[in-house]
Length: 106
Image (cartoon, rainbow, N blue to C red; front, side, top):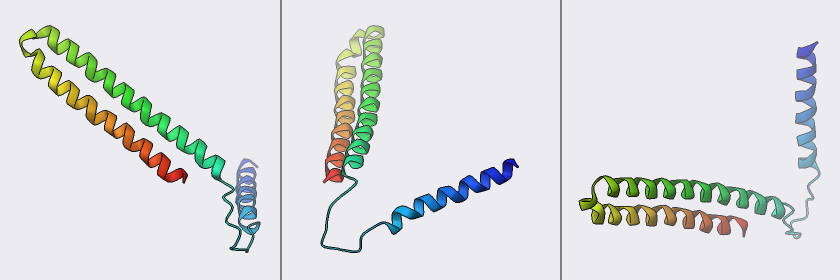
């Protein structure tokens, strides 16, 4: 019985997804994007994930640089240069994600 319910739900799901494909209009002159809102939401969620990842990476770099400078104060200038380089690279990845978001929305 349980297997029959699973097959029934799978068939109904496939049939329901097929209905949207048959509901499309054939007129090519109507270039209306009905998924603009969904694209904006997906782009916002994707960019939020990129920002959270960048923030976590930057916080770990900052913590590691502080710990390294505390353990070896003589190497602090070299550590600071490497930290700033790492922060710039992470921030460039986040800005690249923002660029991709704007390119995909339009």
